[in-house]
Image 1 (cartoon, rainbow, N blue to C red):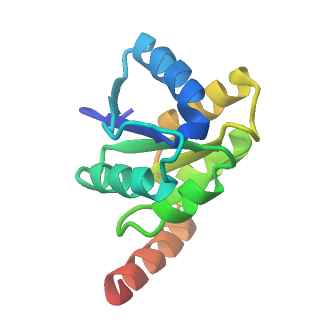
Image 2: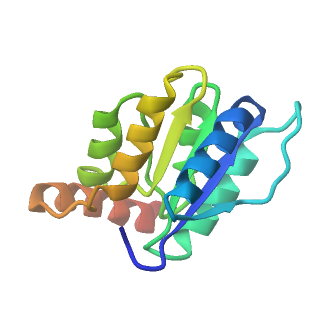
Image 3: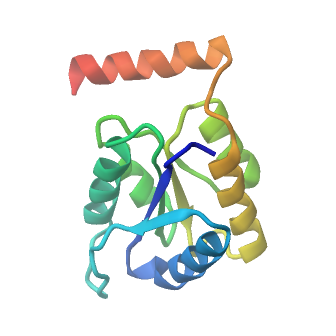
Length: 154
């Protein structure tokens, strides 16, 4: 776990209950959890949350983010539009591990209506937070290709 790491968390209206449970769980484990501060309503739109969280995560390489919507899909698509963000939509612990260790992801998207077992969700989140960033040359080469493309085209 990185020093001074902040974990930003956000959800749309379909992830409010799961976000509350995760915030409680992560704070109990001594992590610096930051809600992005946009209030939820039944008419909220996931891109607003994903963009704001992505911008906050991007401010410091130690930061990570967790996004929650019904499927995890919309949040991951929107977050990946933020320059410097690589977001994995995970439905398993293996997805969370590979997203961070192989693909250099700094944001985890969870579908509150897809992965419903809280023990699995906690294990995915713990794995994502505690997994080391990519370090193998083959992974770094691919991540750097993505970063280079992003720098040249976005």
